[in-house]
Amino acid sequence: MTYMTKKIIYSPFYRTKDQFIASTLYSFGEKLDSTEWVGNECYFLFENETKCKELAQKYYSGELKVNPRILFDSFKVIKSILFNN
Image 1 (tube, helix red, strand yellow):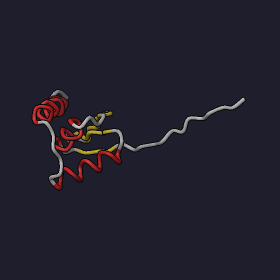
Image 2 (image 1 turned 180 degrees about the horizontal axis):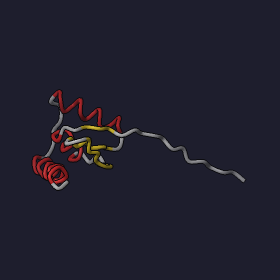
Image 3 (image 1 turned 90 degrees about the horizontal axis):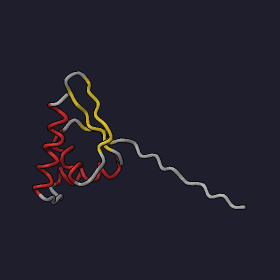
Image 4 (image 1 turned 120 degrees about the vertical axis):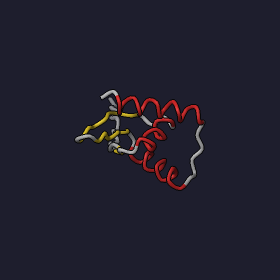
């Protein structure tokens, strides 16, 4: 009898307090796992750190293109998290 094992790949979270980066990541479909409040600052924790770092680098270098409607909707979600806590 042959048993197959499933390999689990650990991917640490990408953590940012920048609401614009968080909105951009969210608009690209990155999964927001949770938020973490430290004093008055909110940190957004996204899954797939590698992909998020890649997107953040492209954000800063101006290489990203995103549908504005999706981006603004994502910004509303991020903003609601900040102001509803």
